[in-house]
Amino acid sequence: MDKITIDKSKCIYCGGCTSVCPVNALELMETYVLCDQDKCIKCSNCVKFCPVGAISLK
Amino acid sequence: MGYFSRLAQEKYDVIIVGAGPGGSIAARDCAKLGLKTLVVEKRQEVGAPVRCGEGLGEVWIKKASLEYDPTWCIWKSEGVAIYTPSGRRFEVIPKNKGYVIERKMFEKKLAADAIRKGARYMIKARVYDVIKEKDKIAGVRVETPEGKFDIGSKMVIAADGVDSKTAKYAGLNTANAITEVDSGYEYEMSGLKMDRPDLIHIYIGTEIAPRGYVWIFPKGRDIANVGIGIAGNSEKAAKEYLDKFIEAHPDIFTDSTGYEIKGGCIPVGVPIKKPYASGLLIIGDAAHMVNPIHGGGMGCSMEAAVIAAKTAKEAVEKNDFSESFLKKYAELWFEQRGNQLHDVWKVRRFFEKLSDKDFDILADFFTPETLLEFSDGKKLTVFLKLFAKHPKIAMVAAATLR
Image 1: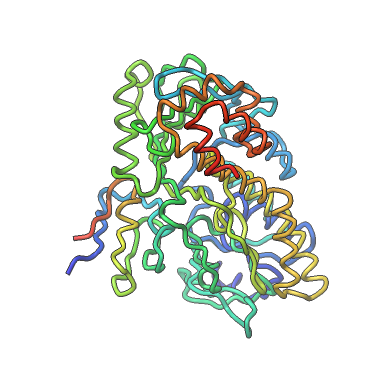
Image 2: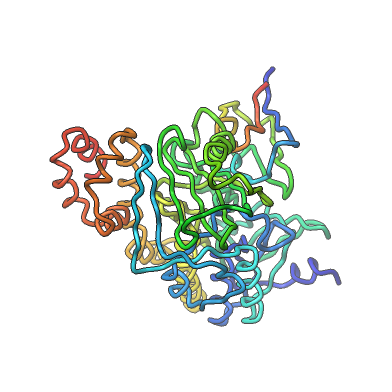
């Protein structure tokens, strides 16, 4: 099944994605972002939002 | 005893989550008013990484009882040059000047000052929950390099930014709708050729930056923050639009490169209606206290921090941390700023519904003075009448400015 994947080489750990997650599944951990796949509802808000295109649903 | 354990064993009057400009001004004022104050910050360095265009109006510096300091007020801006989609240039020189600041230094100075006034700071400490006593927020639960701690306090001020978790742990819905945020991306660059480094430069247009703008905020004669904010649900990533803009302007960028990347989420909706709960106040980006037109949040945040600290002092004195008491903070803030920001939000909605051609019509319509008034959300009913001359703009105005 599809899941949120964060490309660490692209991520600038700005944390913006965590601000648009409606279910609080993302958390910025200083230099990377954690995604709680159990909470994630695959709405793709974070995918659309990411300023550097580091997040995908695949 | 270690740095974290020592701070964690104390009980506090106020715990402030987040050491940005809002958190540190709140900490300074709480400490000055005699409250035992702890700031808890997730990052291991106050000030970095920066997620900001770093523009700050002089007026906000005064409002926060700060003084001009050349270590962080590093470049003065006399005004703004706005470029319409067809390339017309519109210059606005307001009475109130602004600075482009060095935010890393700014935040460090604010923290150092708050500590001098008596506040304590715990960095590299992530709040993973709040402590609730009955329905009242009575402290935070933190994860630190020395382990997890429960730290008790009479109340909490959430100043943890647009990605605030504290308010959510307390049960408030502070989530940002994807349509009500901008996605921001920025390079700090050197080697730029700018004809007017004394102005900030704003480029608008749906091809350049959908529902947003590209900015050049000079930090020196040939250095600047070059950034972009676009609607959070735009088709392409902000980086793509900005890189395209830089490529399209070799006159400015040929001999330049970036030496810092900054990014982030800019709340451009309306402030949350209820920035408080029993034992909790929410300030700044965490409560979406941001100017929805230009996306500036430092000033609003510091202004709210001053009000929050006064309210916290009164709450401690009266030993009353109930919602009905803390509501006072929200009433004061909405009167002073929030209601105005709500009108600025209407103006943002007006602008976002216009086509590139409409912007050129507007360039003839506005004088620098009236544009300033309008973008401050002032006299909206007067503008509504004035727009009647232009059928399409009148329709957009009727749908957004009422």
